[in-house]
Length: 82
Image (cartoon, rainbow, N blue to C red):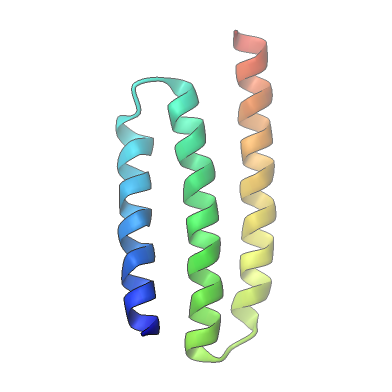
């Protein structure tokens, strides 16, 4: 069951990456970047349960903070640009 969840997360990660690369506008890419960071964080959480290693939860927490900070920086950049 958990293997199926991991497959679905990988597929959604790939689709968000396509939107990030092919996004027609910069705000589309910012939303795709935020989606990528959330999906990658959820993948790390699921992998921590799969491998029964709590270190992945620590990495997921830090990765989530970095993704959130990156989204805020992009939003500030877009606010000044528009």
